[in-house]
Image (cartoon, rainbow over all chains, first blue to last red; front, top):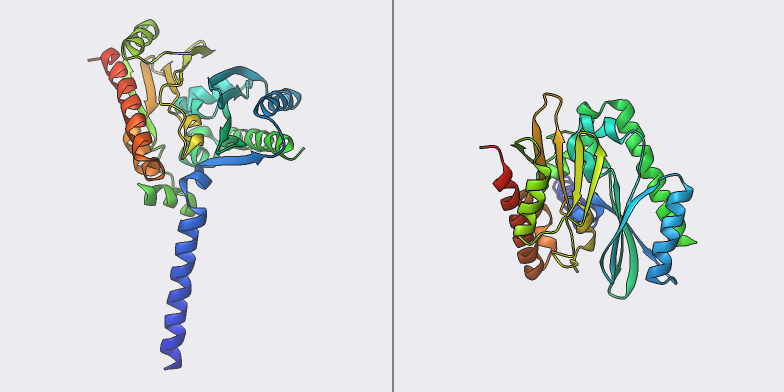
Length: 152
Length: 134
C-alpha cells in the first residue's frame, strides 16, 4: 500500500512539474524573447537612453525605425564580423543587426530583444564554436545594456 | 511543432531553423523584389547592404499593426526579407516560414492579430514567389 501511495505521489509530482514548466517557463514569450519593463521613464526617454547606452557599449546603431507612436525598433549591433556570420548562416540576419524593440503596452514601457540561444543551437554546426561564442557574448552585452537602462 | 522547439532547448538537438524559408531567384532581383512587394502593399522601409553579397530589407512599415498580445513578435523575422548570393554563386531570397511561426506563436495571439499577421506574411510570400526562379 505504501509503495502504491509513494508511486502515485511521484507521478503526481512529476505531472505538476511538467505542467508548471509548460505553463510558466516554456512559453514562446520566455523561450524566444528577453523582455524588461522600464519603470518611471517616458517612452521617448527610454529610446534616447537606450541608444546612448548601446553606443557607449560599442554596439553601434544601424537605424532607428518608428513603427507607430508606441513602437520603435532600433537595429543595433553593427559589428565588423557580420559578413562572416551571414556568409556562414544567411538566415541569421534575424539576430544581426540586433532588433531591439521599445514599445508601450497597456500603459507600461518595455524593451525586448530576441534570445540568441535558439538560433545558436539550430545553427551550431555551420556557425562553428568561435562564432557561436562571439554571438552569445554579443547578446549578453546587449542584455546588460538593456538591463542598465531598465534599472537606472 | 512546439514539442520540436522544446526538444531543441531541453535536449540540445538541432533540427535546423524551423522559422526559415528560402527560395532561389535570378540575378539582380533586388529592384524587382522591392517593386513586387510595393505592388502587394508592403513597403521596404529601409534597405541595408550588409555586405557586398547580402541585402537586408526592413519591411514593417506598420503593416501588421502593433501586435497587442505578443508585441515582441515584430522583432522576430516578420519585418525582414533578405537577399544573398551563396558560396556557389546562386542568388536566394529568405523570409520567415510563416506556417511554423503561426504554429508556435499563433495560440498567443488574438484572432484579429492572427488574421492580420497571416494576411501580411502571405502578401510578402506572394511577392517573393513572383521573383522566384522558375
